[in-house]
Length: 353
Image 1: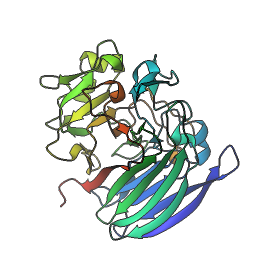
Image 2: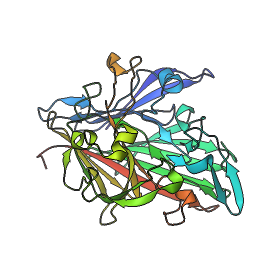
Image 3: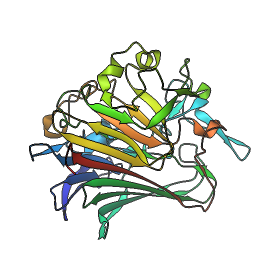
């Protein structure tokens, strides 16, 4: 396993941004940066034996800080996704957050973790090489209580998996619901859209409300709808449907309720490249987002351009607005409790064992 460090620019406070690339003995390579504890690249082997970078990303850290409107590769927290009416109640206290999305709060507020500079260390153990990022999110950070000590670890394993471990300890009861907002295109970043990718989702249901208010979300059965991905199919079969949840979001931007029969959440395949991606997680849900409004024309790696549906985000999570739904698994973490969650992205070549 090799480690490479590269200067990746300066942040607004003139501190160094670093790109760290880990490469395993099979040639698979993972690039991450301390700006936002962000995923920048992942090079996976295709059916011809060549390697393709299948993660959308920017060519320098400054773009991640100032132009990352799509949250490409970012670590998202404390709470990923939406909180209805930009507020929640915890221990009898009502906490007000910023209104950042149509009367709701999304990804905790405007001061995103993806724009902050994280501390880091690089290590190796029997499981693989890893970069461990750490950050202190202070009490009332964007309106959320508790001093939260966070660690996000990216590990590259010998069997070509990227394992992301989220950890946190707070001195007050708080909410912790972190995810990674990486976008994947298994044909290679900047190589068109993902409409012809094949997708499997291990989910019998999804959360939705007709009025678009997550406060009214209920669990819906996927049976007989375009959201039934229990048998792998091309994503465009769903995207081209007149199903109201698809039409209202201009594509997929929905939480799927993962079945608890295994940790296997998703399989994504490209017939063109022969690359497959399996996602395993201990989270109850996954937000599938097909980059429905992406229009990134400047700053891409290799000067690539990313357009509408240029990638797909696979965001493991608690359900949206779970803190305000008593029937959803709660993201509340008690003071002094150690929060830990693991999501693994395993890359392979279709048909190879």
